[in-house]
Amino acid sequence: MPPLPQAFQARMADLLGPETPAFLASLEDAPAAGVRTNTLKLPAAALAALSPVPLTPLAWAPEGFWMPEAARVFFNGRNPLHAAGAYYLQEPSAMAAAGLAGVQPGERILDLAAAPGGKSTHLAARLGQRGVLIANEIHPSRVWTLAENLERCGVRNAVITQETPERLAEHFGAFFDRVLVDAPCSGEGMFRKSAEARQAWSPDLVRGCALRQGDILSQAARLVRPGGTLVYSTCTFAPEENEGVVAAFLARQAAAGRRFHLLPAPPEAGSLSPGQPDWGGVGAPAELAHAVRLWPQRQAGDGHFIARLRLEDGPLPSMPRPAPASLPRSVAQAWQTFAADSLVSLDFLASHTLSLHGSYLYALPPGLPDLDGLRFIHPGWWLGAMHKDRLEPAHALALGLAASDARRVRRLEQAEVARYLGGESLPNSEEQRGWTLAVLPTPVGLLPLGWLKASGGQLKNAYPKGLRQAG
Ligand code: SAM
Image (tube, rainbow, N blue to C red):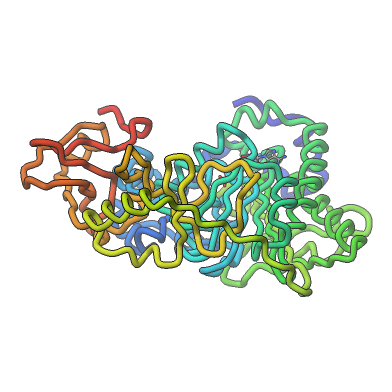
């Protein structure tokens, strides 16, 4: 690991005084690891029960846990439970932003800078498949990792867009109950694990990031409904990117006649450190103390900053035009044929709207505005693809179902799990027909892994090629 930049050390010594040696030493510690239960699939206590060693929950997100070394070899990216979306591997401090966001099931949420999806999958779990999550990522290749993670977690009410904050603000207006801006930043909080972050750091980088963060926040503010909340987070210590950006934002908004106020962290979130009003620049308000800092010398996780900003109440704007339903009769028929044969009921789709995009069939979350003109990857829950007059179910459909939703399931034997995830077909010993849900038996229930399709004496493997694990 390259040494910490000298200019960084000097800046932090000015800010932290006698705490500086402990702070600098903490940046040379091994990084902490965390695992978060995907509560769309199982309760937090169930994940802890699966662990080979006891897990300690995080105060700021009780569905997340500190991961001791002995748990890391179990909860890794190759465990079939991971492929089944039972958990998300996430640094403990990184769970604070969504953990403290105050999401209520049924809300309209925007995650403006969402890839690879740690916070989006967390927000989605808090929504509990109700309401709508727009997960946006500006970067054209990172957005696909975001899509993959939301799919694996079985999220049914997410829309994945690849847009600039400006275009989203123009399109949606003040539509959202909550907007999360997990901003691109100078990444000082990741100095423990990232040599690139240490090498890329400079005072100019900090200044450049602060300017960009201010621009993103100005657009994000346009997307918050009156009485809604804007959550701003970074993984850096630099006051210019934290208290400084928030203070300048509050002043700009107030000058434009819009008042945001910082909300204090809920008491159950534990002993988080306060924001520092005196680091926010001239005239910075005392309420900056309501922001939250996670310091690596005070708790085991990385450095983070979170500010929750509530927009004052006011008249609600008119809602954007809803997404139009567009479903050719032949597609509706193909879906009904598939569903009648393969699914027990369609109750879980009662409030969604079916919509065809190209040859792909989607279930749009209720209340979703028209996305016309926006770049999106998925406009909702991907149900399947039309092949001539038949519907082939999507992997996202399998992962969003419960095992009890499928008419036919194949409980994979232990030895079959790796074969299935590796892409092998299985013998059709029970002479099943049509589409069968491959499920992972676990001590806490059956978790879907993907589809199998009966063909002759075989159950052909429909696990996506890009996800297959080499043996
Ligand atoms: N929230 C993510 C998570 O929890 O997995 C991490 C987000 S990362 C800190 C910041 C993201 O902002 C990056 O994916 C980056 O591509 C994106 N980004 C960079 N410039 C941006 C801009 N001008 N507007 C919006 N997003 C931007």
